Image (cartoon, rainbow, N blue to C red; front, side, top):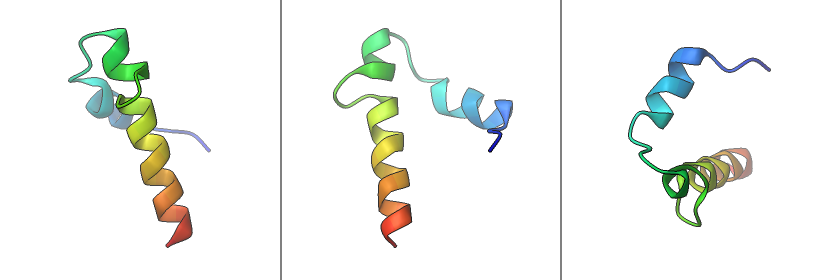
Length: 41
């Protein structure tokens, strides 16, 4: 599945540091949780 560049740009626009993206409460964790919740629904 291809993910649109515009969606990625929107998601990462507020990431100012690696921690914002990869940290325990970072974007990757938030997206993973959101996808998991959506699949369960």
